[in-house]
Image (tube, rainbow, N blue to C red; front, side):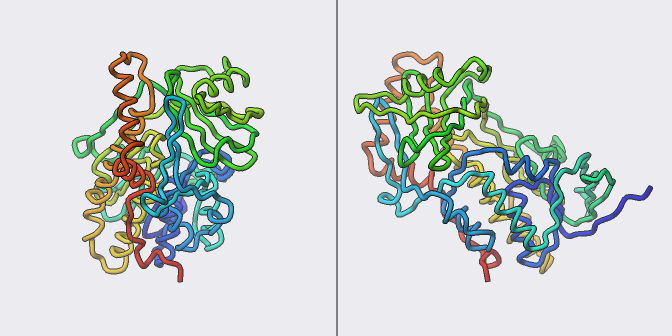
Length: 404
């Protein structure tokens, strides 16, 4: 039986925030595209992930007509706390740079983008299977897949974008002799919880202690997200609520008497992480965006923001190609995107090494780490560097992205 053929300009493999944002921006500029994802919509929408959005990411949601819910339902934060030796030190982004960030969970970003594509008549297909991409070295790549109803179909397109996440299959389409993979693995992971409790702090707390690292994050006035450093092999079933809360309180304890506000824990998960970059981010008619090409430790809050920054470069490049045939911007996409990627890798690595404890650390290592933290909080210039990296390096919002 012949497969149904769908013809479009750009085929996007991966319907997470990066793929949907790209689809939205291309559609605004009149560039036809189709998005595929092997996950069901509700699975993505209900996968709880923390989210700190840089100002640029917020503008991409609000100024391009996706949705303004981030401004009504999100929480603007003007800084973070670095806590060590039992004392909290506020890094005030607003005072240092005039910038802020927004707390808005990544799955809510997805919900807004998916709703915007439905509203605007976008062709987004969730729950597909057997996705295969071929012909990226030709002028007419093909994406074959089986839709959610079990029907085999093909997308005939001119460009393929791989935004299919950290387990990307698209990135492996780049020939081995044309790609380089850089990987840095860490000897620790995060033990993450979701709990029913009020805010323990007005802003996020990044805490370094002799008992390891903890991040006191947030989600809503009623539900909180928190993490503590653990072994990648840790078993969540060995940790009941009381043990978790006691351990977190041990990490954040100090002479100021600070205590976390407790509540029932309804999710426990181990989150291993790594630093990873595959370069280049393009080959032939294939372009990579987001986690398909790079992942960072979550300590620097860069993952989703870096994916949106990729899209901010790729969208106008593809629009120029579609409208004029010029490849000037698409030809340099990888080179331009990787500059920001490596800056984000450096910042995320720095934050991770500065705040986590190493099992083999000696007294020199521990005191040097504390010396680094004291150097940060005692220097306005160093705090300014941290604030600049955390709030995000600015980029222009191209005219095609602005809402009419």
